[in-house]
Amino acid sequence: MPDFTTDDGVRLNWTEQGDPAGRPVVLIAGFKAPATSWKPQQGPLAEAGYRVISFDRRGHGLSERTEAGATMLRHGADVAQLLRHLDLRGAALVGGSMGGNSIWAFLAGTAGGAAGSTDESTGESAGESRVDRIVIVDQTPRMLNSDDWPYGFYDYTEANRDTLFATTIPDPGRWSVASKGPVRIARLLKALGGGERRELTGTERRLLNDHARADWRPVIARTSVPVLFVAGRESEFWPAEHAAAAASLAPRGDSLVIEKDGHAANIEQPKAFTAALLEFLAR
Image (tube, rainbow, N blue to C red; front, top):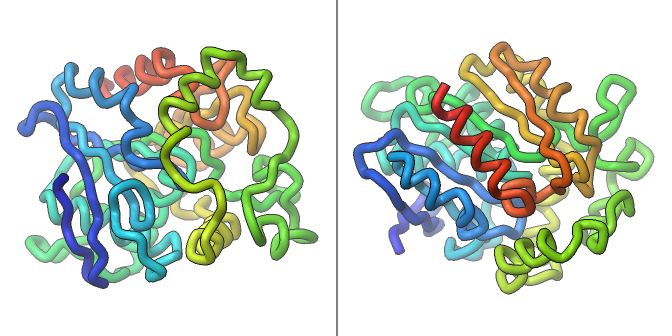
């Protein structure tokens, strides 16, 4: 499997499918999810002529397990370095869950001059020249609820901001696993069931809490490329209205809610999600 080493010495893995000369589509999975969770999209994207790159973030999938870099900005810098390593330009970035917010972290880091974010060949921000459009899959840009943002993680407020994610990802109890039905459950088990450990390491807990406390709305507001925010109507973690609310912040934002779909939107309803993704990429 191909890999590269980041500027802080961590080995990161990716896989590639499709036309090497095609327009690049970079798939970034969520917390504790491997790059293989994009399998329902990899084939259709490759068949449509795209260069499909599925990225395992540090500590995920086949990438190196490390205690270093358990912050969203570091994960964003890793995305910047992947794009530079592969010399990708005009890429579509597709991020699921935390993988979506790693895209905002990438753009925030490139704007702020974070390590590895400057394109050595041009001297410009890696985000300015390498990204053509973005797709965010069932991820609110701010998980902490407030008066001006009621679209965060259910019941996550200032009162419990330091404790809710102290040991694990809590179950808000809005949608049960059983409510998904046997077909959607089988898809989830096939994609994720044998992958990552269920318990969280200290490094994973640090990353999760950094993720939970971030607010990427200002980054969205200054993003000039088209962005599609996708929500699952039955997302376990936040109201589906987060997608439209986030899209309203983006200069070129759009949103879609997939019915009878949960947080793992690309897995639970792969046909509906893939059709929407291909349509957005073709615009």
